[in-house]
Length: 254
Image (tube, rainbow, N blue to C red; front, side, top):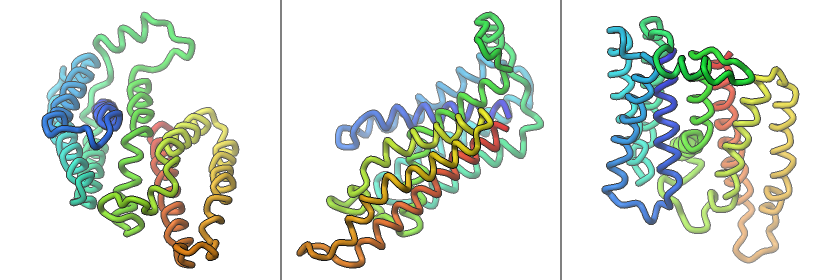
């Protein structure tokens, strides 16, 4: 799965860089440059890891490049309010194609393997596993948030376009808590502390409960009794999808 690892690193890096700029300040030129930057990261990683030394590696890298561009373009269209299901499909197809063809992927060699052997890191990671973990960690950040939002919109828990005072603005902290939560679950799972990972999930519900409870108040003039249903649905769907992203990464890492 070495080419899949490189693909995840490229996707995670491109999404993270895009998320660092406020949506209001993004220009069309900057947005168009993100796929180019993602492709550059992908091919640099593939070259540094020796993934272009076999025909299988070259073919899978080409397929990864196509999947990367499809994801970045469709995800950006989804951010503009259309094609959310198409973006999810692009991401799923890109990953599934790499999983199905993983037998053709060569092992990590080249500069990356040489550097890992030279660096004498405390945990002495295997090159293949080190690259995979790097990709999985990066995907937990901005990419994970994007996937969660795409599912929320596709299921109707969120409107296609952000609305001032809408449900997503009620629980804004999830954009930061989500990545932290996924990283905690992935890290604790890799450490064999699955019980501790479960405690992190339980703690999120306890911490959010007072905020959710506040939406059940009907003594406010603009508050409707049904508002609790909308916010709760947003919280539950978003949380389960976020946990699924982390646990899928944990399965791949295992």
